[in-house]
Length: 192
Image (cartoon, rainbow, N blue to C red):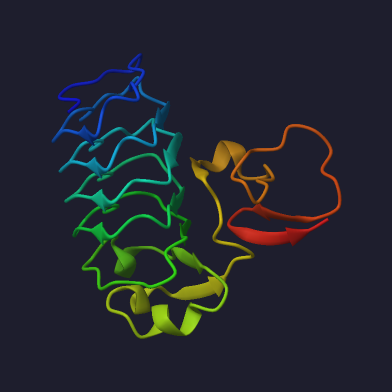
């Protein structure tokens, strides 16, 4: 378990859990990658990381605990398909504009973000939009739309600094001119 981290922490593949408050109030943290070995992000693990702009999560993550990303700088979040539990307040007080869930079978969540105070758009896998519309608290999002795929291995949470970046269907950010195909940009599918 990773008990404490800082802005220069490189999480090793041997870590299976990011402990409670491990990165809490780490203002120098702006980018971090969480390896496939991590199954759980603990309570308030990244609370008050207001400069956190990019967080890469890999398939394999199963639980996001209470307030894990409370008051973070993230504006776009992508939840891997492997996640089976998101506890209350996971993204509370964040500045989320879009939340993309790659979970095909939504489970009940409770106040994962402050929906009454924001206009967070929810993007879900093709064919699961109706399931999200009837599953508490997912149904409370003001806008629910389908994305083009849910077969992303590693996905990135990207801030406004990267809002015009294209992401391919494998979850990689494109740096050059895209080939013809389907991409994600600003949480929406784009056909080039």
